[in-house]
Image (tube, rainbow, N blue to C red; front, side, top):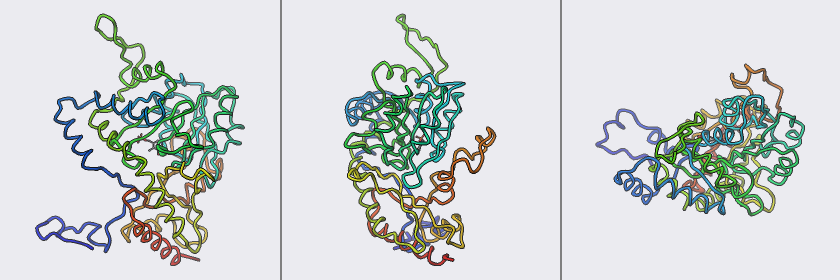
Length: 400
Ligand SMILES: *Cc1c(COP(=O)(O)O)cnc(C)c1O
């Protein structure tokens, strides 16, 4: 129930969203930070060493352990990790990188930023992962890498991906920003393959406030990443420094690494809660007209889906409201929603390079119809029921 504290002048003047509604506001994502982590951060703040240091080393070791031993290096975002991964592969002007357009802007942006050309390939409507038949057709003599996204934590077909990459001699940079804790046939994403990027933004399955990781093949690559993420600096035997490459400034502070450590030990538990709430959604989200529900996870490997998001497609052609009106109706009921994703090839950046509507039908349909409903580990079944009831009600009222 709404609770006013009588001594809170601010809330008397301007009731918050929570207080206007009978229920607490449900944002579409919410991080879970425990007291042990908060105390750990305070310790780091008092330790005298707050930027990259011992906590980063511990976090990288813990990530590597979690992934079965491959080297991992952390950076201040997944976007930085994508850029550094491209540089590590030597990708630049004249090179092509195959990417979905139905992904977060970071992957296409970083491909363009290093001077290469993103080659946009359509996704499958239900899984929203790359259509590998279309990937095969998009490979040219200039293709250097494939950069697939594991949408919402659902792994792409890893067997097909690596067979194709091996056959054509391509690097793979997996955008696994949404897929920490996901697995393919019992093997963790990031635990095998070529390069894997994770994100620790607050909307992901674990957070470091901001942060990202790059998982590598060997220690030589890891050392190169250490240079690329910090000014391109190498240390000389005489105690001075040298720079051979204009590197970025992408190091993660220890404060953030300590949060990441506190999250990683709880990741399996967080993901189990996410799967429970998703099972509730599949059970209770029965609307008329029906939504197109997300892929339920690969048959027999359902636990390999880490469920960062639950994002159905709205039946807009059977409604008298548009998506914005649908979202406003949920917002009025105290329920937050998101849009993941717009079509990257239709942003101003890539329209200027000649892209336009009609190139990627599934990507563009998803971009028009998708809506992300609330999903986070501390949600209850009753919260999911409340969201489902609201969606059922709004769609029934708007049916044509
Ligand atoms: C969140 C996200 C990113 C970017 O992560 P940052 O850590 O914020 O840079 C990249 N790709 C995908 C698919 C994402 O969801």
